[in-house]
Image (tube, rainbow, N blue to C red):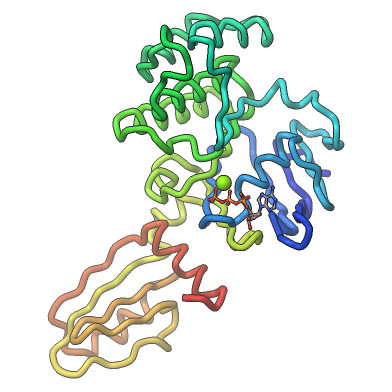
Length: 297
Ligand SMILES: Nc1ncnc2c1ncn2[C@@H]1O[C@H](COP(=O)(O)OP(=O)(O)OP(=O)(O)O)[C@@H](O)[C@H]1O
Ligand SMILES: [Mg+2]
């Protein structure tokens, strides 16, 4: 396999006849934040569990840190920080005791870094874990994932249950870790958070990879959302070059445009246009086009 930081090759997991993830080939570069988006049951958690070695692939495989990882090989785990979606921690310990224990297991923990994380995320460490609220438990989960400054950070829906302020702080911390060289792979249902902090994003659906995009491309108006209001009867612009979505709402036309705007502008110039807005598409719009390509609007 190539020497990408992490690479999956036709990674497949079936649960009996149910597809978990099928034929997934993804490649992560060192130092990027990579978002993994998809609806419920798309295969995100399955993929993450495969990468951690908790599930055995039905076929295919993956490499990490430039080395193929065989089933049963646990050595790569020490270099990964992991937050599972269904976090379970020893209920009778306090946060302090848990971090102390994990610190001894990892060895060589920079405790001032841990203290810094605890302070930023405002985690109450003195209470027993069983008494923590869902959000506070999630924060503790984040700290155990990041405390040993792993090279690769894999998180399954890390911001679920966090309040908006803490969510923002958590995303800031991830971005800072990226800036210091870490690579981050996380699943999410929040398109806006993915858009905010990711360099690239993959979209999965029904166990299949539907697309991988650079967020910078979305920002550079390669894909635009256009609304036009005309007087009188609105024409059908669905066949104009670059128009990938066309919807008519009374006198208003809503379009998605990919690539050069010139063909559409030329066509609009000949129309009685009252008003026009032209905005860079959001990630959400973009994925909507994927859904349509999959034949299911
Ligand atoms: N242990 C299991 N046994 C049988 N089927 C499973 C098991 N785990 C997951 N699946 C199935 O595999 C598919 C992918 O599930 P997965 O949990 O990976 O999705 P997900 O993208 O993480 O979804 P969500 O957004 O709801 O967390 C689903 O159809 C699910 O029902
Ligand atoms: Mg999941």
